[in-house]
Amino acid sequence: MVNHDYQDLEKYDSNLCDFMPIKTPTISCHAWSISDAETGKPLMWYNPKVVLQPASITKVVTAMVVLDKCNRMSEKDRKRYLCQKCQVSPYAASFAAWHDEYGWNAGTNAKLKEGEAYTVRELLFALMLPSGNDASICLAETLGMAYRPDESPPETSSYTSDGPIARFVAEMNRTVRRVGLVSTSPPSTYFMSPHGMANDLNVSCALDIARFTREAMRNRLFKKIVRCTKYTAEPNKHWSRHASRSWLNTNTLLRSGLTDVYDGVKTGWIPNAHDCKEWGCLVTRVRAKYAPKSDAPDARALPPASLMVVVLGCANQDRRFSDTAALVTWAWRVLEVTGGDTEGKVIAMN
Image (cartoon, rainbow, N blue to C red; front, top):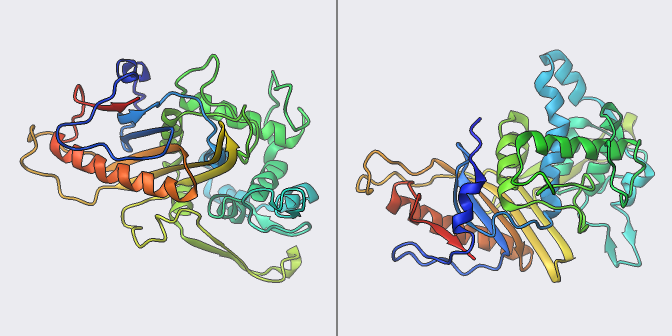
């Protein structure tokens, strides 16, 4: 795996520039990055290393931890692991309950109920499609004791340091360190929970998100899940599930008929983050929808076949999609002109 040196971006961090006659789109997000989804090379960006709350994009790493074990298992053991029973605890179910003091549920959820049980595989769909905070807790509670605790647990953690959730979160942080971070001291990505609900200490940056999402997309089941628009868990009376439970993907770009272009990956939204009333986020992989131009400046250079696009801090839930779509349209035009070679021409804003 090639890890591009993010220090190369320093020279662009304070620049404001458009490319040729192609006007930069008007967008609302506080930070974004566009990279080659195959090689990981950053192509265009704005505030790419600024540490911000990633909201439910956190769940990409939650899924990575769950699925990482599968990569080291035989086919038989993998099936057994994914079919493992996970029972919904009162704490996990509380994330799907109505709270009068908030006037809403505790964030997005998969409507899991106390006493129900689901397989690991089903909970991965519940985690990634409706962005279930309840599913993230259920997975962490079930699987967390398999991981070692954090050697230096945060003082402000909501979880018992030697408990399953804290162990699971510690493994999430070890996972992103292995993949690679923009900064390790202090870490440019650090998780405080498996769900990513509002917490000033639960942070990441656009470049780290692009990197760990690219790594997550190497897993076939992860890729299948995040491209799925709807999943239904069938009734199972032995597991206290007396009706089917269907989950829709929160990524409306998938449900807009553009599934031949957008390959997931994960939405995020929290209120009152970084002095903003709403904080929308999205990481998505986009496949090329055009034929490479033969009149590119360098005939040997071809635009990337797919892009990884990250937006952080959009003005609301809808703007995370419109900002992404605007950036994607703009990026394809720039790449057509440059033949995929943005080195030295590029495209950064600040």
